[in-house]
Amino acid sequence: MAVNGENASAVGALDTRGEAGAAILAAIAGLLMLAAIAAALNYRAKTTLLFARQTELAAQHKHKAEAGVHLALARLIANDTRDLRYDGTAIEATFDGVTLKVAVQAERGKVNLNQSPNEVFRRLVLTVCASEPLANQVAAELADFVDADDDVRSDGLEADGYAALGLAPPANQHLQSIAEIRLLPGMTETLFVRLRPHISVHAFNPAPEPRYASPFVRSILGANSEAEPDAPGDPGRAAGVYTITVTTIEAGRFFYRVDALVYITADQAKPFIMLDWRRGFVEAPPQGPCSDARGA
Image (cartoon, rainbow, N blue to C red; front, top):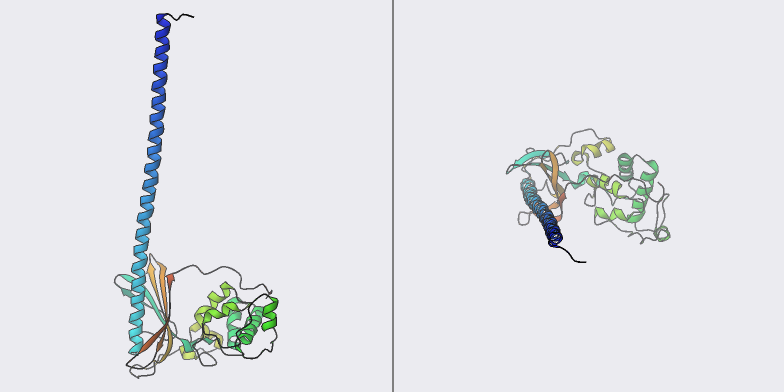
């Protein structure tokens, strides 16, 4: 069919308008794509900047917390007890604009995990978790774990009991680290975190010494007297193992924490030996149950 001039012009105009509309849509799509890319890059830049600031903040708090440890260590070596106590009571200090909580705890004021049997440990478990069956179980498991024989206590376990649970047998020797009590079948992470500030493998006395024990442990012992620090200036009086804990505060909350386990030797040539360091952000304690799979 023949197309006259007017019809041809109309068709041409329609084609032109269609091409223009398609071009506009393509341009809009391109702009939207560029906007999305720009938004993504902006978000990434903000995230990177935030991460860099957090990393810098964490590094600052880490170094200042470690500086606090060394300041407390110097005081320990000098036996300078003007305001530091050895029972874990924290004091507040400011270092380079950052608020620090500094505490020194003599290990001899903690519950000795290598004492067997261990009534104080049983009472400690009972106090932090309020379960008599659990306290009896975990205390018996600990006693069986650290003693040298294979006799099973009531509520305890020896090699056969561990094998029935698919676990490695108990060491039947003294613990070298408090983390080893995580191997007890009745131990949960919640219970371990609650016990950790109060237990030690460096407390060689059968029971905590009240004058060095924290107020919490003294309440378990029934000792209400104040824990007086050693007299300053007497070389050797400060000798022993201590935990120095320094926590930084940022925006009104605990932010970064360093725990240093140190042996004060009272030897001027080598006044201390660093036994362990633990560093990290302050995290909320676990909220899981104290009870375990054995049903305590």
